[in-house]
Amino acid sequence: MREILGVHDAPESVFTFSRIRIIKADTIIDDEAGRFPPNGWVRTSPLIRFTENCIFETLNTAYLLVGQGTRKTVPLATAMAFFND
Image (cartoon, rainbow, N blue to C red; front, side, top):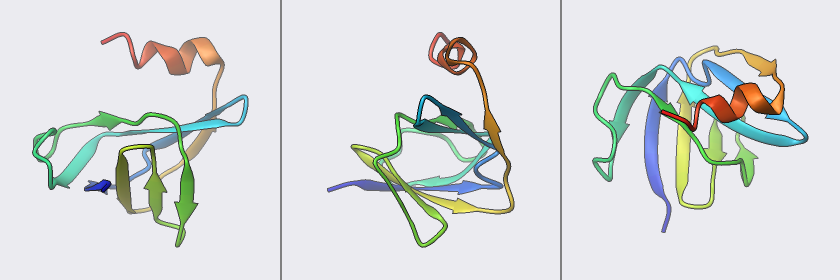
């Protein structure tokens, strides 16, 4: 079963590269699984399914997106830099 993670003002950025989509969001509202603290940030693994114009699903998590957000297309190297923290 996928966990649900509420993210405010998300996606701050939905990064698109070679048809792979991830989210980097700066404000987490709630994480049912307790992996991320409230008001923390998150970057996702690649998108599996996007539904209802607000549910971004990865292999293990469903993110409920809240707020306007923006979309950006970035080079692969830029997107991968978020995974080097």
